[in-house]
Length: 337
Image 1 (tube, rainbow, N blue to C red):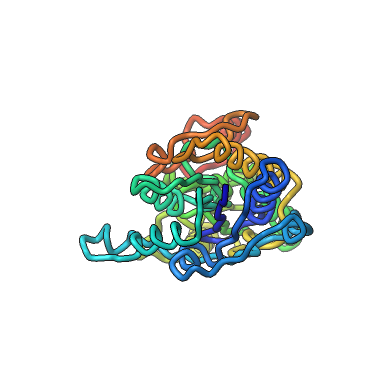
Image 2: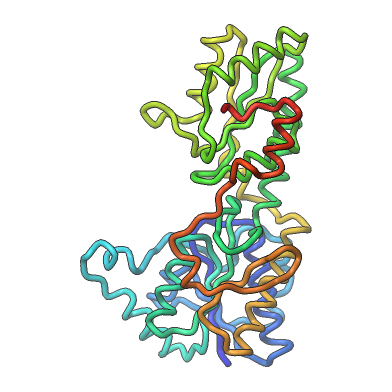
């Protein structure tokens, strides 16, 4: 069999480990041919590819980013807007001309949606979920999330000392447009006093009361972790809005820190390397068994798969009864509600 691999959407620590997991399993265990497709679906549209062998897949396990490059090309976008698009047809033609028996799509929600649509057109497709946001439906965890949480937690740890020294409130903005997984996990691990996530909403009066109550108890500094996706008036950046609002209401000096793309860069954590390797290996196993149209996933500690048709258009969000939220509330941490 001859399989193609691409990575699409935002980059993420662990993609290279996945490429290695898929490719080495395919070559060494199943005797398959492996083709790397550059720049996501753009490479499939332009037939910009390279042939992998065992040697070319060595030395990439610990590398961040993606050796294949990536893009946010969505070949079905105009089609979905009731316009005309030849891109899906071009992809199908190039898939045949490249002699592919299966396409492995590494990416987040948008990539898995595209993979599902290509599968519905008749291509043999396997999806591998990746995102630091951990919001892909159908899997308990995605690689990249653990690395991002480690990076955010370290930043929060470092801010404790300067916040304490100056008796300030430090507002730390982390990634997460729709899902607050990074804010929740990094905030709890970093000992934040307030954690604001999109799923729960927030009341700034409650936040301010928490900060003032800490001051009355002799704790003149606080750490506030906020996800970038929380709502603000006029769509102002959350860190800027929350910092200004707290300082105006409490009179306590506030500073904001935006971690941004630092969370997506650098080498993957050992956990993410192993997770990516397991998911990549299982993707190749599905190909060998000709079980196409599926996305590999984690359920507990087991590697499984779900139909791509079930994944599209869904998000895995934090729920109010999550045990970290319940435990945090019991310990006096404010979630702004």
